[in-house]
Structure formats: structure tokens, C-alpha cells
Length: 243
Image (cartoon, rainbow, N blue to C red; front, top):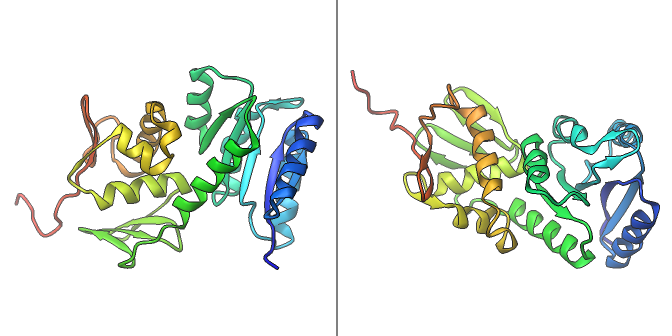
């Protein structure tokens, strides 16, 4: 029998937590661990890591916690468990809240109320995209190489660690290096058709990649904005120089 995948739920509403525990248990694939405060979530995650257990497959995070704003937990999770998918589950439905959560490192954002079907569909879509590997081995363009098992980008001797979503986005751009990809194409490939209008997802993750890759993120040389269209990845040919 396959081992159930562990998911951490950080939610102070007991009714919601118990409902999700029952619903995910009925699916037969997931073991939902519930913590009702930010402090307990940190302790639970560190205990799991100290026991040598696999990282949480995903973290479902409410924003309105009794001991702080869940937004402040997102960058902590990104540092402590970069392998986990971080999905915000919140009653805050304004775009400004979604943008803030994504900027801090969330992979997705669902507004309450939502159905278990939608939650699972989004989670499974993230997992499918994470599971896609290059059929030709490591993806290389010029002196750039994506390393699957380390989830990082190598540029010559430089190694840049990436989160799951950053890795997926960069892999897509590398596969189409030199071509313009529209917001809609990127959203469909990385987040799925349900995010067709969520252009802010793309803007935020492009900026996060620029902050890791570009010498000056405000004057990018590689991740180029094509106004009114989308984005293009330009990788100089290392065999050519202007000298």
C-alpha cells in the first residue's frame, strides 16, 4: 500500500480543519496534519524535519491566524521547506491580498469558500507540472543548465536555487528561449486554465526570477518584457563576444 502524502494545514477554524481532514482522508492519498497557530506550525514542521521524515507535500495556509498574519509565514516556509507547495486558503478575496501572498512566495491562492474538488484539482495540477521531466535529460541552452534533482539553475560555475514554481517557469522559458510567450500561454502551462486571467501571477514570478538571475532586476538583460505581449528569455551565445 502506497504511503499517504503528508500535508500541513495551518487554520484556526476547527470546523474547516475537520472538514478538510475528513475529505482528504476519504481520497485515500493524503494525511492532513492540522495546526491552529503560526507558532505550532513552525514547531510541527521542525519536528517533522528532525525526525527525518519527507517534507510536507503541500502547506495549506490561512491568513487570519490568532498569533499573527499568515502572510508573514510564507517566506519562512519558503526558506524552511522549499520543496513544499504553499497554497493560501483565505477569505480575503482582493487582488492586493493575492499579489502580496504571491510576492512573499506562495504558489497559489484560493478564496474561501471553495470546494474540495477545486482544492484537489489545483494541488494535483501543481504536482503534475512538478513531475514533468525533460525527456532529453538536463535542459541546456548556451551555458545555462537546469538541474532537476537539485532544482537549480547553473550558469557556468554559478548555481542558483529555485522554488518549485520558479523552476517550472524557467524551464518553460528555456524550452522556448528567444521566443515570446504570452501571459496566457505561461499561465496555462504553469498554473492551469483556471488562472487564465491572473496576469499578476506571471508578473510576480518573473520579478522573482529576475531578482535571482539578473545583475540589475530593474534593467533585465535576460528576462525581457515584450510590451503588450508577454516575456522572452534571451541567453547570449557564450562562444560569441564583442571584443
